[in-house]
Amino acid sequence: MNLSAFRPVLWPSRFPISAAAHCNAPSIRTPVPATTSPFSSTARLLKRKKGGKNVTDPRVTAIRYHLQHPLTPRPLHFSRNRYLRHWTIHRAWLLFLRKRRRAEELELERQYMAMRAACEHLRLMDSNGNQVSEAEAGGQGPDAGTLGPKGKEVGRLYRAAMVKRGVWGSVPIEYARIQTDFPPREGWNHGWTRN
Amino acid sequence: MNVGQQTTRRLALRAGRSVCRSCKDTISRNYASATAAAVQSDDQIAQHVPPVAQTAPQTSYRINAGVVLSRPPQLTRDLHPFEAAYFLYQRRLNERTALPFTRYFYYKKRTPADIEWKRKIKQRLTPARDIGRYKGYGDEAWNDELLVGAKESDVEWQVEQLLEDAEQTGAENQTEEGNEEPTVASARKKVAHEPVERPMPRTTEADLKNDVKSLNRLLQRTLYLLVKDKEGNWTFPQATLEKETLHAAALRILDQSAGVNMNTWVVGNVPIGHYKKDYHEPLTTSSGLNEVGLKTFFMKARIMAGQANLKDNKFGLTDFKWLAKEEIHKEVPWEYFRSIRNMLADR
Image 1 (spheres, rainbow over the protein chains, first blue to last red):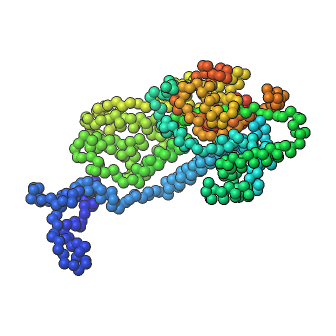
Image 2: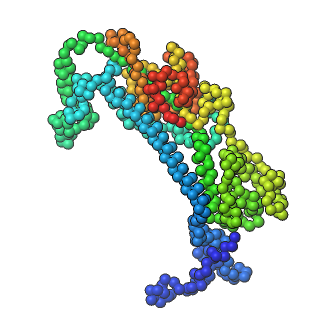
Image 3: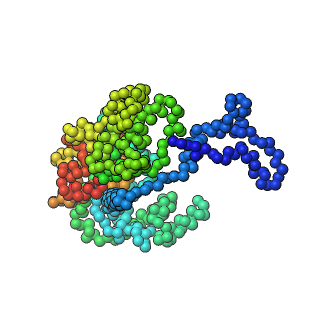
């Protein structure tokens, strides 16, 4: 791979015109010596190094290559038939995604509705397990401040179920295990005992 | 007692419709007189109920709490064939759109890693290790598609390639330079191999034996704990609710039915589903009520480690199984499954 195209054409040290020159201010800067080490801001003494050539670090060249490549990203060029195939594959993928997402949505909705139905059942259930009407329970609608004749004993389990205190404090760390592609070597820990 | 509280209380007592019920409860809880007044008024209302309703024997339902103890999926799901093919197609296209791999940046010249890289890239023509030979540029660029049934589209082949790549150390790289296309087999002989650990198979021993008591079975699916009660019915662990909340009941039932040697977590306070059954003939309970049916409210729980143990259980359970959703369908009566199927996860 020829990387010469990514060597800098304009080496900054060869042009000691700094920003101060544009401000019509007398330049008090001394000319900066040519740096040979691009990762360091300290000027290196050229006499120390034999040859004293301006050698670009290959890593800098590679970084420039990645940042300034003219083909980023490289375009996809397809023939007509190949493009049509690609388009068909793409449309099929979108259709597949849509079906899968719909199925996932429906599953979540089923679970939510099961939960909701259970809660609704609890809300209007008295202490004997019978369903009461909204009027008997009270506490609803425009006259929310007044309980119905059975208001006290209706929905005790519902009110307890709606308590959110400490719900997030109890999540165990073992629950954070993610799904993997291959099972663990030991398998499931059947021998776990409590203390 | 400051002025602000008094105002709130007065508001709450005067116009009930402007303060919600829970707020009103909170406010009046601090004042014994207000609570007493409320209780009195409730009693008065209750006394106004005509006594006709009292003469008929009152009905009641038995209220159960059930625990849906589940083991979450341990493995990622198997890919749909179309998904797998599409992912491979996209990974191969990516080799065409990405910038060429910069060897000089990652490998120092004439190091073993550099030489190893050169040898590999000559074989597979592309930096990716598990997509087969791919060349998106040059004269043969048009011919970059796989045919149907190619070995590269097999997931096991891709895993094998990754493992093989990990095994090659690059210590000896005496491949024949003159050969234009060194076959994989001839190159493999020359390179030193350092064996790596193979991953465990995705189908376990319990899968092959169909061991329904093992938690190693069906690792891609959610497994639910079902127990066999005294009458021989398979149900979720359940028991009659005492004076407790559903969450507390779930904890108690888990301990009393399947033992304490399970690392479990009852997910929340909210039931995830319910099952209602009416008896053919009402029973008379000890308190003189007519029990006409039962209602079970299910709580969700997860197991992270351990195994169920029915020894010394308090409910006379005789057997247990860990089953996936469709297997539950085969074991339980239809009306039971109809009530629980919506709360179970498909996967």
